[in-house]
Length: 195
Image (cartoon, rainbow, N blue to C red; front, side):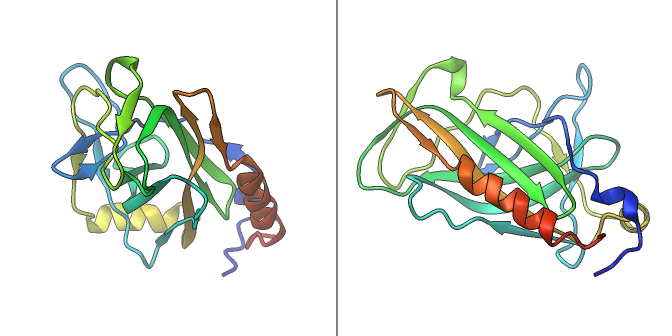
């Protein structure tokens, strides 16, 4: 999958532009673009952007129903997903740090915190409750113009991995997958399509 574009092999971080939003069993990362304005996002076609949820069998929370979301104008990667307690015991959660990585070095990370910053208890098999956001984003269908712009960016096709990097629990313990994200960055760097 060579693109011939050397400039996109540079590693950089996209400033996180999203927070967790949950409505009618759909969770969306979003931000407000201005007072009273809804941010417009679209789900890129899977032949252009392939999302995979990292397998994390040792993680007490699992990611479900994930989609990559891209902004119609400006901004970086965000996501739509659910978080669920996969264990057999209740979890006291203070925060969950999620990260998305691509084979082209683009990253986006954000921290989910419960409403009002209070710790929460999540029962076995249940969804993590929503964060407190303002306006929900508007998910729009992909148009021919958006598709052409995506192709012209030179950054597709792309593989995107979403995973939980860290969870802080109310008992003071922490789940960490930082070694996994470090290994994934090294892997993507070694197999960079643009090299």
